[in-house]
Each structure stands twice: as C-alpha cells, then as structure tokens.
Image (cartoon, rainbow, N blue to C red; front, top):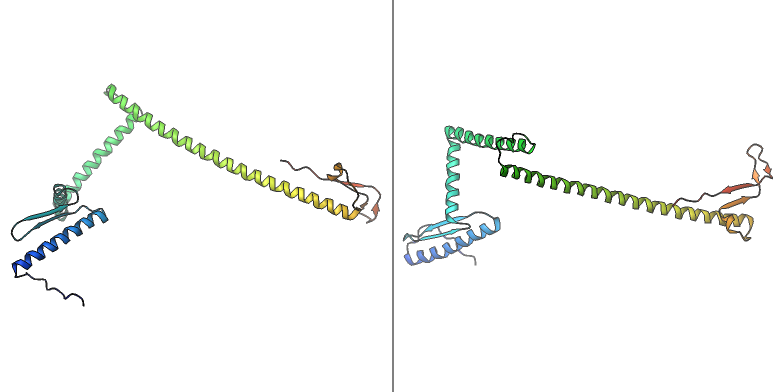
Length: 225
C-alpha cells in the first residue's frame, strides 16, 4: 500500500518535529548539491532551526552567492523604478562609450597613428601585439595554401585515374577490333606492327556504291598517358 498523504501543518510533538526537521534538512541539502552539480547552477541554502541553529550550503561560497543575490535584487528594483531605470541605462551607455573610445584608440595605434607621448614600453607592447597578429595571419595563410594544394593534388589524382580508365577502354576497343578483323579475314598470324593498323583490302565508293580496288588503311592513334 502507498503512503498516506501527509497534512502540511505544524507538528505538535517536539520529538517528531525534531526528527522530521533533521530528515528533511538533509534531503533538502542533498537536492541542492545535486542541482548545483547537474545543472551547473550557483546554489546557496540557509536554514535556521526552531532553536535558532544555522545550517547552510553553498556551491561556491556563501559570500559570493549573497553578494550576487543583493546585486541582482538591486538591479531588479532599479528596473521597476522609472527614474532608477534611466540612471541604470545612462551608466551602461557611459561604460559602452568608454569601451568604444579605448577600442578606437587601440586601433589607431596599431595603424601607426597617435603614437606621440607613448613611452618605449608602450611602443614595445604595440609591436608585440602586431607581431602576434602577423603570426596568426601567416599561419592562416599557410593553412589556406596547404588546403588548396591538397585539393589540387586530389583533382590531379582523379584526372589521372580517369585517364587510366580511358586508356584501358581504348585497349579493350583495340582488342575487339582485332577480333573482328580475325573473324572477317581469317586467323592468320599478324605482325606486331599490324596491331595498330587495320588493312582493309577494299573500300566501297560513297558515290556509286561499287567496290574499289584501292586499299584503305585505318590508323588507331596511341592514347596519351
């Protein structure tokens, strides 16, 4: 049988109340640990018993959790207040404007502009940043060239394979022609030079349809490697 439904109200018996508090406190802390680990959440748990005893758990540190909570609550309250919201966005705009000015200044310095007033150490830092940037650009360029070379080599291999297949087909066609020639004119021995030249004794005239006595030679071209 299933457990009966427990009525959520204060337990009158002090002993039962203390036992229930101990069990549920341990279960609550266990659930908080699991939530922090499984969900990568920042969890802070504070418990005071009826006697005023403190029990706490924090996934990082209780101080950082409380500071984060107070900051988030303050920002939330500022967003609810129109005047505070305007102040908040003005402060954010000022921060972004300052960051933009720093980026523009760094960009001009990297381009070799507005270097007056900089010391040797500052110039060395700019030079080191440029060298690091150039190194990254060269590595990217070499990688692109290497990829292009590999792609060209692959295409060359495919073209070479296609040429080999065409060469095999030409050899097969030549052998078929030789077999047809043997069937037409007998199985007499043929010299190696006649494998590339088929001597047909007579040709048919295209105008009169008569057989001509002039021999016709068919030359098979050699396939290029």
